[in-house]
Length: 324
Ligand code: PBG
Image 1 (cartoon, protein in one colour):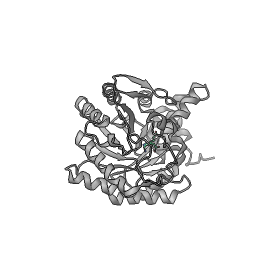
Image 2 (cartoon, helix red, strand yellow):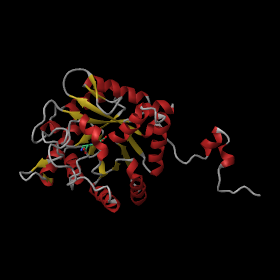
Image 3 (cartoon, helix red, strand yellow):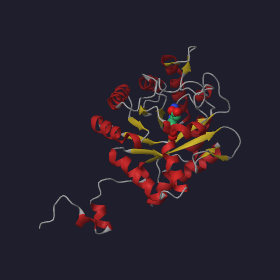
């Protein structure tokens, strides 16, 4: 009986053969490492529900960024915890704000490492929404655009290598693009959170960023998990407005959309393996229910196989070590 050609069994007998026919690669160079930078005293403080991830003072963030770089991770993604929050979220566009200071410090110490900055207001607003809240409690899309653009420009001036708007307001990519261009940052790319779903998997992040909405929810501006066609449309719209990289977020419940958007647009695609996805594996591993290393590498490989060029993951440093 001839051995069916479609099976790789004979090619699985050695590591070298398996390597030759492997379809998907996973390497530290695919990762982005998110970090939470906190204003104030020089320390690191653990974050509940995200074991291994800390709130970092600027000095600690510089150190962690260096560690990521030495592991072969090309980029970090910065989220800020400001000294104080207010109704507008003014800490977001403060030239001396925590993300701006951290960006300058990291770029000075590690000029080759890419610093990507998150653009959103929810970490900076007292009400925890991603934009300007109207008297009726809804978020005012167009009034928010101005503030997001101001934030992006301030981050670019601080030296950010890439701007990542995560607010999900309509038209923000075009608005931010125009503002960056006008301020002399035409070469600063935008990585747009294009298909960002209203997800339960952001729970640990909202604790970390102290950004859970004080009232209502984010379903007015984040997407319905049931809508795949809409996600493809959102990605196309963002590309039309000037997005250089589009993102799908979360990753594991939305692998079909990573694939669809990648195939349909052909543009560089990032997938965000979010805080809840991280926490699930950490919790199961701590309970002895899962082999963390094997589970993480399998999940990250799956995200790459689905079509992601870039994987944003809190496991980046650990995974980079395991892959060495
Ligand atoms: C801000 C933002 C969120 C995340 C990234 N940017 C939270 C949210 O929308 O509530 C979540 C990231 C994660 O869970 O790891 N809008």
